[in-house]
Length: 585
Image 1: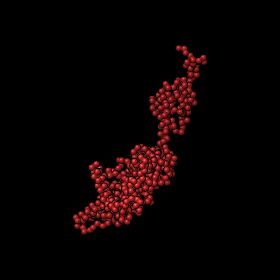
Image 2: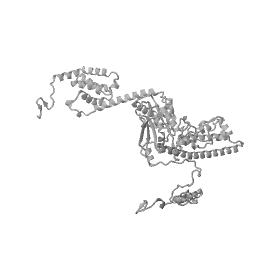
Image 3: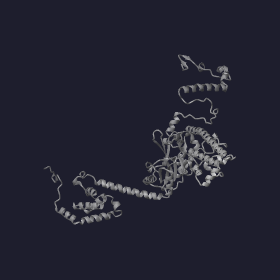
Image 4: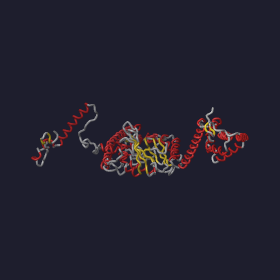
């Protein structure tokens, strides 16, 4: 019946509904009722519907409720969202960047930031009021008729001395993902410890002006809050930690118009740009680890392409994926990653000439360092240096190789163990980005080369010893060469005399010579199979072989044995003669 013609009867659209036509109502149906025009009626209808829906939600046991009012009526500053259809989601999942998703990301992060800023402002106001009450209580106790001025109670406006502005107390562009000074060794309570410590004279001054102590404590609290928000964030913090600090009006409120277009000073872009510059490569591997499967999605990009695709990386990070970086495989570089370091490890590295080219704080008080040992170093050298540094500074040995991914600054660390109960994830912060070669870089390269050569010699020694231990029955007696005989003899001699390999060489050569082997055959066998020959006799292996063989061939016992062999008839091959096989018993 939904078709216009069914059972032979035509049913035009006008039969099903009447259209309103205000200009010529006779052609378009009746006039629209006046009851539907006033906004008050629409508000009442929406409110009634919301009440019915909320009662149904309550009966069903759901905590969610519907508010029929507009965002403006609720007093919520929020941008209208953009719906992402299944096609856009599928394209983004395959790594295809879309303009619609870019717009949605900017809107979502801006809206989340509005909510977070409101909560943060309320927390600061609450703490400021509490500190103000503390100051007034101290004043009443001391009888001082003073009020706390801006130098006492305004966080971040003045230094503890109360004279000069203190940029460290403000959440400026230098914090967050951008470079920032080295963290205070005193931890989160560093400022408070500086106030509490000191001489007796300082304690006396604090006793005379207790409100001053409270003001400094308030400033310390503000610094701790700023440090927390620099280190932690979730989807709600993307603009808080990344947007330009001047995206507010002159009253400190968020200026939504400033966030309507692309941000000119995106601090994620700033951090990425500094990290790319410090690494000094032309091409990079960017890895996006899937939050659910753990698989890594790899992209090889130039530095410009990394910056160009930052919005897509932000979306991947917002969806719970971690973002990593390393030099591309074909790059010639000398960067070595050292993972899982503490502040004290970094201090030791700098004091010992292993200064990092860049330092990334992957989670609070946990760092990765990229050490530049040379302009270019082979993968084997870089891997050996990485293992050496990891061992010396108790870093993560699993990350000590030549092709390990490090974190890319400007994104959040999505590991569950770093997520707070409030849902915050720590930002990956770029702490240093000097990009310079370490003072001890050349020495590290030389040391690594020596370690590699020593390891190769050890492997060669083990290979030769293993070949000496081959079961003798695996070799047919009539097909044994001088090398086979030498290895067979050395297998037993090494077990008897251990590390006295020169003695083993001499006895083995003596036995081969007594069996009629020539000096040339014995010398070749020694050169091929003598364990650790290059390590034991560096630079004069040939001279050692020549002297040993010459001395063996001159032994009277060897000469007598060789003379007897020369007089004896040549042995006939078992089971064979000129006439063919011999099957006689």
